[in-house]
Structure formats: structure tokens, C-alpha cells
Length: 143
Ligand SMILES: NC(=O)c1ccc[n+]([C@@H]2O[C@H](COP(=O)([O-])OP(=O)(O)OC[C@H]3O[C@@H](n4cnc5c(N)ncnc54)[C@H](OP(=O)(O)O)[C@@H]3O)[C@@H](O)[C@H]2O)c1
Image (cartoon, rainbow, N blue to C red):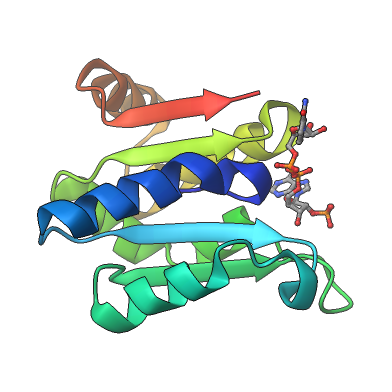
């Protein structure tokens, strides 16, 4: 789940449902906003889910808390090998939030991860994304 800014909204619902239903599969949330102190939406819920293990992985990108901007796709690239492993295990990749900048950059990061860690050429990368789309495993709600 990649949901910076207002993009967190559906993923809070996803995680609430998974908690209520007792689902045991792995979950990974990438969230980002400008400042941790003022913009960490649903912080208590998210941290509790991490402590309980419902969230297996939590990657936080607070863009303006340091000199150099950090965005969710920077953290994706750092964790590229693990993202590739999760995809190969059948992970669903869901993105919600800003369409004009974030979703485009996240899409590019995903393609770069597939190319690098899956050792795919350009055509194989396009095919991999196409297969994810056809299986409804690459889901985007962007605006
Ligand atoms: N119609 C409405 O009622 C409504 C309400 C809310 C939002 N929106 C629109 O929805 C879109 C999303 O807004 P949002 O409030 O969810 O937050 P956002 O503007 O997407 O910002 C959330 C975080 O994403 C960062 N960010 C900026 N560019 C990025 C990029 N290329 N890749 C990854 N992260 C990036 C921001 O960092 P920096 O700011 O530090 O660059 C910030 O830390 C915006 O276009 C906004 O105008 C509309």
C-alpha cells in the first residue's frame, strides 16, 4: 500500500478490515507527508498495527523534516529487493493519492525495481506490469 497524503484514507480502511477479520497475510504501508509532528495522520492506529504485527513493514517519508526531500518512492527504491520478493510471492501493489506527480513517480520506481531486481529488460518489465494489471494486483485510486 502506497498512500502518501490523503492517499492513506482507503488503506486505513483496508487495515481496519484485515484486523477485524483476523487476516494473517503480510501488509506493508508506505505513507508520506510533510512533517511527522503535524501530518502523521492516524498515527496511533498505524503504530498500534505495527506493534501488533498487522503491519509487517512500515515505511515513512516525511518530506520536509530534513534538508533533502524524501518521498515514498525513495523508500521503495531502498527496499527494492524486498518489494520484488513480495511481488514474486503474489503481493498486491496498491497506490492512492496524487495522480499528477506522486503516482507517476511511484509507477516509475516500481518499473525500475522490476527491471533491476527481476533482471528484466524493457519489454519484460512492461509485460510484468501488464500481468499485474490483468490479475488486478496493481491497483490505483489516484486523483
Ligand atoms: N479536492 C480536494 O478536496 C482535495 C483535498 C486534498 C487534496 N487534493 C489534491 O489531491 C492531491 C494530493 O494531495 P494530498 O493532500 O494527498 O498531498 P500531496 O500534495 O500528495 O502531498 C503528500 C506528500 O507527498 C509529497 N510529494 C510531493 N510530490 C511528490 C512526488 N512527486 N512523489 C511522492 N511524493 C510527493 C509531499 O511533499 P512536499 O509537499 O514536501 O513536496 C507530501 O509530503 C493534490 O493534487 C491536492 O491538490 C484535493
